[in-house]
Length: 219
Image 1 (cartoon, one colour):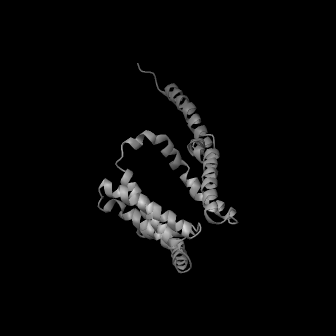
Image 2 (cartoon, one colour; image 1 turned 45 degrees about the vertical axis):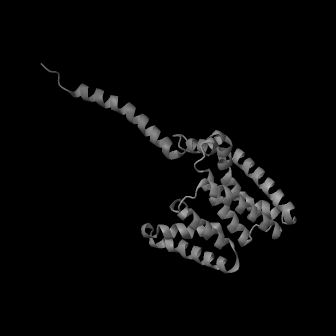
Image 3 (cartoon, one colour; image 1 turned 180 degrees about the vertical axis):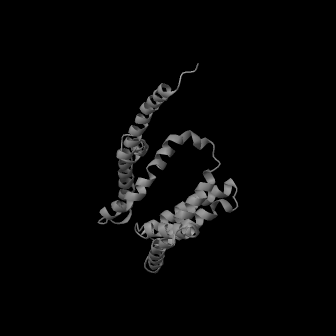
């Protein structure tokens, strides 16, 4: 579902620079997105998150005391709502409360200098976040037999452990893989280019010697 949202939103944003055939991606994405708005809550949550991301740096900054009050209060409300709906992650009220709480928390910590001391663990959390995004729903489906807060705890722990493992085995090597793919001998075309450069290096001195041989000696 998210793939269609991303395709539709990105395509509309760049519609002036895209070819006509791109509407084959834009229209299905819009159709799926609008259809989801009528049968589920994921589209509403996605739109709310996108709007918050666009206005985050345009909204006035509250003083630190206000953020200290609002952020924990909203997280507490979100937790209470999650308990009330028996661990239903897709409850609209819970999702919106959590999104707003995260926005206030980001406002709270954006000017904290001491948090830079924890750069390594924060960088680790950021590093495997994409793997977590890709795999969390699989974990949620695998634990569908559980209910209530037991499922919340199991999903939280299992999804993070799985994402860390996926990052450790695969994702953290992406730079090495990119460098390997750029090596001259990896594909036929770079190998031919390197071979042609080698032949040119040999041919240039040969042509030079031939030209010297045919040049008349000066008197």
